Amino acid sequence: MSTILPPFEEIVTAHGPTVLRVCRAVLGPMDADDAWSETFLAALRAYPTLRPGSNVKAWLVTIAHRKAIDQTRARARHPLAIDPLPERPAPSEPDRWDGDLCAAIQALPFKQRVAVAYHYVAGMPYADVAALIGGSQDAARRAAADGIATLRKTYGEGVPR
Amino acid sequence: MMTTYEPREPEQSDLFVTLPAIEQETTRRLHDRLVHEAQTAGLLDVAYRTVDSPVGPLLLAATAKGLVRVAYGCEDHEKVLERLARDLSPRILHAPARLDAAAKEIDEYFAGLRQGFDLPVDWSLARGFRRLVLTRLRAIGYGQTASYAAIAIAAGNPKAVRAVGTACATNPVPVVVPCHRVVRSDGSIGQYVGGVETKKTLLALEARHD
Image (cartoon, each protein chain N blue to C red):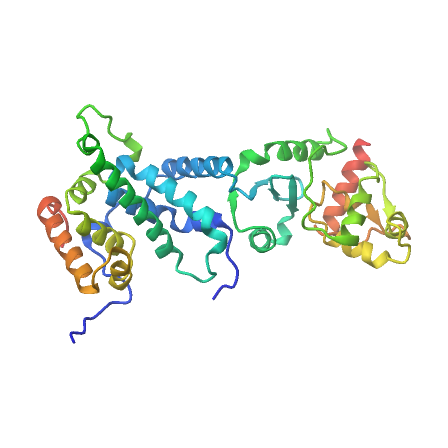
């Protein structure tokens, strides 16, 4: 186990893409960039106090989770923001990230969405997912399973089994 | 008590295995934004980049105070960055723009267009007598050499010839702080942090353009 923290650049390279996928799954492509940036800036600020050898991915997803809750609450306070106007521009073409799947995940209830994102997208075991979102490990597993079942119905056409 | 099987690695859902990789353009844009916001927030403790040179790729690293490290390829840039994380701060990002001025001066030096550096240097990585020795090296002009013994005298400790050698061997900012201009009293070239061949190349370059 490492006794010193590696340069933060290594953290960005190793975990940046996964955290972006998680942000896109939880918040949608529109808000994912902001959430990613806030997550990594907060992580950079706290980084010198991180214990060497910590599970860095879980640490980053924890920070991203708090940002996601903040954004979700902000949307609830400003209900207009949840219902984007049709003419709001779509993400530019190179930034499209399997938009249909992303939209299907957005339609899930928050708990199912984060359970799917943290377990299937971030690859965290259910024990860690439960620690993050609250409730038991089984509840986290059920939320993810329910989410996946819904995704199969709403997005599943053409998905190999 | 129900026990459930928890796989070591979460199972893959086929829903997610076909997702495309994150686009390079997106990765670059987010990284640029992070560097910018980190710098604005005062959180970019060490910025680095590499530059190509006739003696191989050089790693340049700077703090807010100035250039703190120049490293040859033979020093293993990855290890150098790890030591910077340990000795200075782990808040290290690849931020080429913050080292544009340093890269330009180094390019000009290797092109024979520049004989001295105007860059601010952060001496944090050199302490005590070693730092004193290194600050004396700037007095050796472009194209000139001085002996380890002469530098020991200039640093106020004529007996510290070996310590001068150590100071040169551990110079955190070679090329910019010209430890390559320090040679043995008998005229032989001595050792160099970037290897003896590199030392010869630098001295030959300076002899050509002096």
